[in-house]
Length: 221
Image 1 (cartoon, helix red, strand yellow):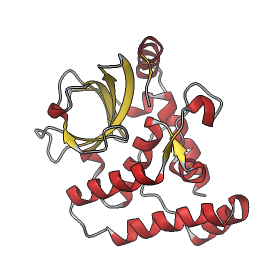
Image 2 (cartoon, one colour; image 1 turned 60 degrees about the vertical axis):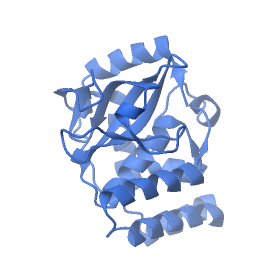
Image 3 (tube, one colour; image 1 turned 135 degrees about the horizontal axis):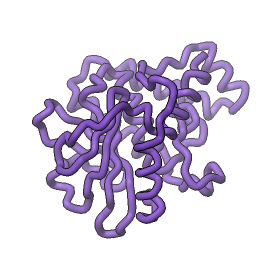
Image 4 (tube, helix red, strand yellow; image 1 turned 45 degrees about the vertical axis):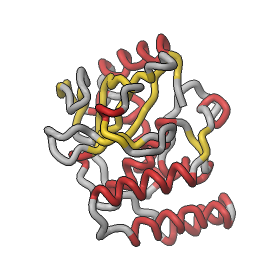
């Protein structure tokens, strides 16, 4: 859910200024029948059914509006995925799980909820330009948290998809959150306000994001 503020602020500074070597452009998720058979063999019937349910969810909601898609996706994963800290789930202080890893575990922390919602919405046809993975400070707890934001236009106040406060609200109604930076497959923004913020470079400068995309490419082969 949250991470201690001093550690996270150091991490943020490290991530922003660390240059990586690959382009982290995003494509829709594609779990083929062959991949599902492999998942069933390695992880069992119950796990493979979660992937089938996800695939059905994506297929059934392609023609919905963006606003319908973000609500359905937010509700789907807030109901399907359990919150478990990285330390307990992955034996690491900070780990960004791929959507495949999250579905296999049926668990994750705030970053994992955000990541799987982001890639699912891309698979539903929502433009990457509308979506941002957004690091915020949870003011009440003085701790860092990640949410997904959706902006209909560049001038729109983003809508916040959260695994803690499950109701989708405009960012200016989330007084409990202070935006720090956001990113997607197209760029990295420092956020000084509740809107888009200032673009400062490519998201390929974020080490954990680059590592996530590398692992996703290997999984979907």
